[in-house]
Length: 514
Ligand code: FAD
Ligand code: SIN
Image 1 (cartoon, helix red, strand yellow):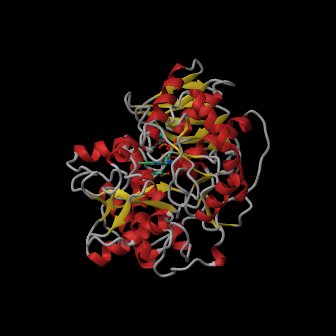
Image 2: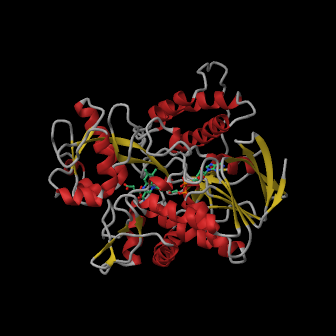
Image 3: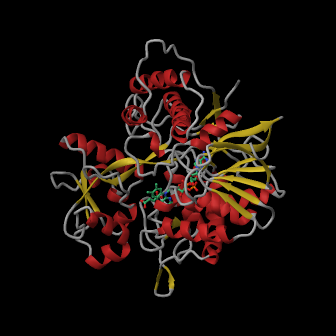
């Protein structure tokens, strides 16, 4: 093992890791650990854009109301206030770093997405927002003199002593060696966990590692039952569920079932621009009704120019796979997309472990509640990264105002379970038993299998097995939380408890007890 001391250790190199690194390097030396190459992350795939109330007819108050409405009673109102009030300044800072947002008539162009009552989504390269952000930030981080970037370095443990985070143990997968790094401030920026599910818009790195690392270190994990399923991922045989941005419906794209019927107005007056959970469940209902594994998104009525200039990436991807979307319907179906829950933080990004912070998709700041409003996640990263660095160099602490219930993982008798642990089996299990529509019976079945796998995990010696172990643990937390929450709210839908319950206007929080 090699020992190294830094002021900040940041785990992850998506927008959360790199933006935080760029802020931190002004006040200390920074180590960024990332388990793949620098640009392997969810950020790179973001399409629709980033939300901020900067339009003429918009205001932080309207953005606040939309975010709270989408969050279905579980948003932390203080965190949402901070998000909407600080979004404009943070985006201005991103523009200063060099992110080339699209413009129209000399001003930043703003689009509309579902459940936003105003056009407030900034985008870059049409639908290549994430790629433009990632390229700009990684270039800036590589050029910064105070930032060391270690690629192919997988964090495997947060070192905590006397309740204080002290360092990180990491597996250098190219050298095959373990490394130990120390710093007074450790920032988890490890992204999401979409790979838990068979169908996901997320790339391979999204295995929930940060949640597993934090849980094992004693940090609180909350809201993990709320996993957002994006309604429209491309459904073509042999092709991964490539995202077809919600902005496509924002520009006038219309959903119809395989019989050609425009179905969304049958479910809700907001039709195609209803919140994601409603659109995703409506699509599932239509697929069941018509016995199909897909519905269609129609943009053929939009001007050719609008489709190709506003969505060049989607247009090109589909064309490369034999589909001209200006002439033919786009086959789509829901796919796992975003984890609303994660490592519980206050509004300064602090976890319950002193010196350990979390930001980005791995964190649960409380801004998304039970259902994230589209394009609020990139905004959340910018706003709370800044606050983490402010806090790390001296600031105040805050507490969540929403009620919590604390749990530990239940014990099961798993002696009769013989299902082999394989990634594909785990992903199918989560998709079938803890996906868009859940029930006690299916959740319990999956809980038992995951508990059996958990009991037989070996000490990992390579990255795939580390990730698999993390996914088993995060899958357990998700399923356990989904079982505990006997109601339906936001992205969490239980067919056996189809309504929200006022009793459940509270958070499920897990904490590992030795
Ligand atoms: P990521 O960008 O995923 O970065 C995580 C990093 O952590 C990666 O570098 C990864 O390799 C690293 N890592 C993970 N585990 C370890 C470990 N154990 N050790 C070391 N490194 C590790 N949001 C929006 O607001 N607007 C959008 O338009 C939008 N579109 C999206 C489209 C797609 C297809 C997807 C998948 C997501 C989209 N999102 C969007 C969500 C948004 O992109 C993500 O929430 C956000 O980019 C997450 O950033 P992050 O930095 O937290 O995580
Ligand atoms: C999309 O472009 O539809 C994704 C936006 C998001 O997940 O916020």
